[in-house]
Image (cartoon, rainbow, N blue to C red):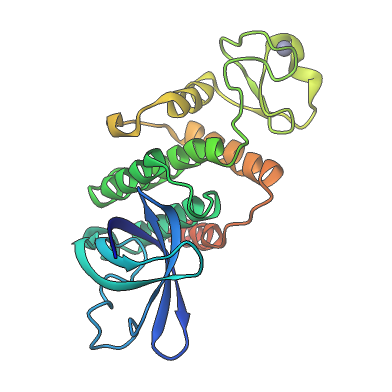
Length: 251
Ligand SMILES: [Zn+2]
């Protein structure tokens, strides 16, 4: 038996009454475990078998095969997130983003801290969009597609303030190289600056950030295109977020 603190990244129903949980742990990295009977209303495992729940899990795990949850104690259910549709949608997105770009059984204290810190921020009322962009920048490292943000993606010269970002070349273009990629996106210097800050920042130090609508839109656009072109992964929760935002604008 192993006792570990873990975050539930994902749950899948299994049969009539069981659930398979994908847990993020500091010790083992990402692991899938069976929570027997978790779907039954009377089950003690019910409350700790929900997405983005943080708890202490007593696990039976072996070298091979799927582990089993023997028992678990709730540390934080992030109730303030669950009470809010928008926050819930963002938390689901963050969990899927992290789940898709982590490998099973590859421990990383950094990613565990990132996941937990982002959920705490979301519960505390920090801007969900900014948290999502921060997570996207951080996860590019783990996805193995980290962009070079301080040098021109075409000539390698240091860029002070870029006005175009080339998704294809994987970074900003300097003044001389603007024409290197016809599809490069126009961005404000503030947008590049924020991307640079996010890439290097310790997530525990995120203060209040005021981001204007242009920078917000540009960050979203650049990161989305970047993931689409370099990762090849489609996130299911992203579609739901888009629909929510559209709905919000309609009213
Ligand atoms: Zn250049």
